[in-house]
Length: 315
Image (cartoon, rainbow, N blue to C red; front, top):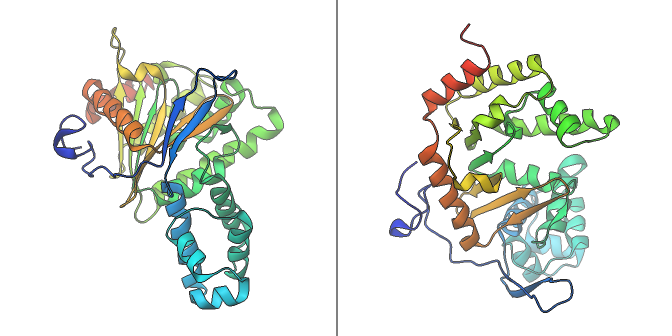
């Protein structure tokens, strides 16, 4: 990674200039009985809307249809179609579903894009299960992902037994749903095997490596897999050792997704809900955390040695 601290010369630590878009600006209104969150400003686009528009345009072009032809078939005006494809609001879910139908988009891909359309303008927290389809689309379009996990191995690097154990022991998922949830989690890892995969930075803690999830054999297999994954040219694994003092990562885990020419967003997850953060000012604060974490983390070689040692792989 290049650059100094966040904000130097207008660059983020990953080399991109900051966008001047501010999709959402919120304030807490403490005078309301529920201390609810109030919108002060909402721009007409978000990263998710832009990606949705890009996908709609791509499917229209794949179907060999012009905007005028789509208008003739759907009754949606060309100006509205143009706004949709450029990621501008507003859009109706019915319009998106109609477009996907005439473009011949079906099955899981259709479901994912409908979910993205439904969620693209919602900055509020969702039930934990809801963002999975949206996340699949976002991960498939990201050019870089930074995954900081304070207590567990990141989902994109989990083995099947470890993922099942996390769902069972940590997330307390009911047994009938564990296999499907684990399969879905592992399926997402396909993005790291694409011909042109995203650049993936996994930052995890020594605590995550030492916490035995699923038993010693499951953990040993997981650590072995981490060592193997770290040899891939587009995967970087860094371990934050036990420091004995405070650091910004103690506030919890997060994921940062960077999109070519479209800025970045941050995903926050807890036991019952998930939240996408798209305000560039807020994203920059997480970038500062990434810079600080990398400054205290072991380098790649030392991280690999620690993982191998804890997994008993040097015996």
